[in-house]
Amino acid sequence: MQSLSPQTPTSLRSVIRPTPRPPLLARVPAAAHHPTRCAYRSDSVHYPNGVGSCKADWQSSCAILASKIICQDSQPPSTADDANGGRSDSVASVNGHKAAVDLTLVPIDVNNKLPPTAPQPPKPLTITDLSPAPMHGSQLRVAYQGVPGAYSEAAAGKAYPKCEAIPCDQFEVAFQAVELWIADRAVLPVENSLGGSIHRNYDLLLRHRLHIVGEVQLPVHHCLLALPGTRVEYLSRVISHPQALSQCEHTLTKLAPQAAREAVDDTAGAAEYIAANNLRDTAAIASARAAELYGLQILADGIQDDSSNVTRFVMLAREPIIPRTDRPFKTSIVFAHDKGTSVLFKVLSAFAFRNISLTKIESRPHRNRPIRLVDDANVGTAKHFEYMFYVDFEASLAEVRAQNALAEVQEFTSFLRVLGSYPMDMTPWCPSRGD
Image (tube, rainbow, N blue to C red; front, side):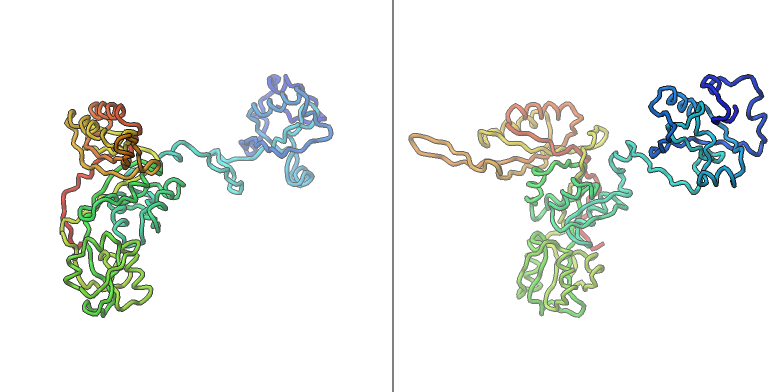
């Protein structure tokens, strides 16, 4: 193909179908064979004699783009490139006119890569960038309530090994961290074998649109922590989470009857508070890891009233997981009815007839309609409390019996929501211990 310039008029037909002259590769020395790539630049210059609005000019430009051009600079760099500001315009004209599209031929190497000096274009998003994070815990950001050293941090590490734990000062902040894509998962407690349910998180499960994707049960081993050199008989108060204080009530009465109990947001936060303020007369109930992190001394080990002290945590995500039948699954639902609590028997019967075991039933006040009034001309107005019922049962939504049970429950209720169908924690039972 011959060089295109105003001095050598060339028709579009000759560009697309070259005349039977010797091929260009045969006429160009081997050293001058440089594969090129046509880079389209959106900030192209409008030349005075350009015919960008002409259909023929556009077709000519497309012909250059379609043909695999092997460019040989006919002039030395000192004359051609210097005259054009270091850039050659040897193929910037078609049929004697300047091309409407700025076509710059950029040399590339044999591996079809951009020159080292050229900026790399941004990588476009793919479906893998938007897919859920890996389930094994690697590179996951997991939100939990508390500070480093809290039991929730240990639960997050057990649920997702090698994860990046993100501490949050409140339970609701952990929910919002997942919703706003600051975290990939959240691990939050819902019940304890001694203290019972954590009602706050049950209310937040209904308020937010996250899904339960798993559970983890963590044995709780409480320690009495204080600054080095502090003696138990000189303690004036003990601070910790309300659940931890209630779980160690009898032991604390024996160890430090003179110490007052004071509730704080979390166990590890109590240990951090003592270390930061150098409180010599105050002790905290927290984990052994908190003592290590904040430089405290363990005054008493294993002070929980019952060694079978276990807290159940749920793992929350933005998207649900696909239920399976190859391993034990648990499903959590919440429902309500406009006609009071009489529907509860019918709901429980739907599971009993199908031999589905219930593991938990929890009632919480109906926030939007806490009281139902029933007028009776003879006796007056009766006031009934309205409740939302949380139920956990041992079955996967992939099972037909669970699907039929929920279909029957839906007939009796005015509101039904599946919080999640997820694998059960089947780790071997291990009582609370120091390690």
